[in-house]
Image (cartoon, rainbow, N blue to C red; front, side):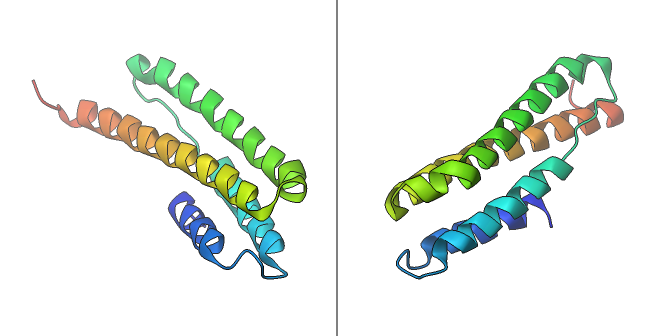
Length: 118
């Protein structure tokens, strides 16, 4: 599953009725899928000037994976449904920002390969 579809599925799950008996289970499953999709995302710099940005992206990815684990392991069971939804939305927002920076990095890499703007 792609990162984009994992984010979309999790957002959809958050919009369902939180009173449903399996809501927390669905959120946990979607978090697991998001974690796997984020784990599969790899950034490699082909150009030396992109190496520092690649390192920053890798650190950010590891932090996001840790946050997903924390929400899935503890917060999901301890917080009320509204609190869970708030935390997961914050997490989704941060993952989306990461995804955008990842796309920017890929764009910069490709722009440099084909000449880019001068």
